[in-house]
Length: 105
Image 1 (cartoon, rainbow, N blue to C red):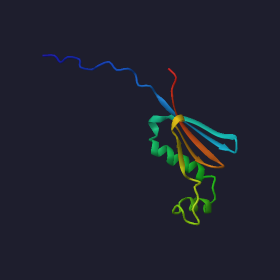
Image 2: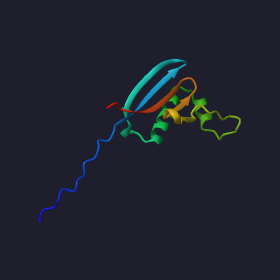
Image 3: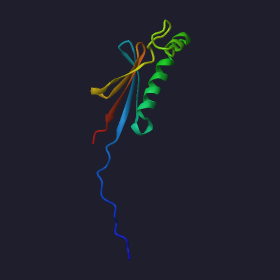
Image 4: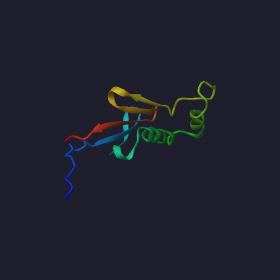
């Protein structure tokens, strides 16, 4: 007895991308678009932290990892989420953003 074709037709999944941008002051210095399949939300946040850290000096990086509220701590590597715009932000100057965007059909 032959099996019935049980595959249901599914609507194609809409592809999405991360648009990563870097700024020094108000000037855009970097832009890259990459498939969202390549990153989880956690890994995109760590990516932003790495990009910002590359421009910091060792003292600033150490202070960014210090316990919050201590005298030596800073917030230079904190990642903030702008939920209405589906964007993550990290850094002050330079700063980087990652925005998830849906591909146009």
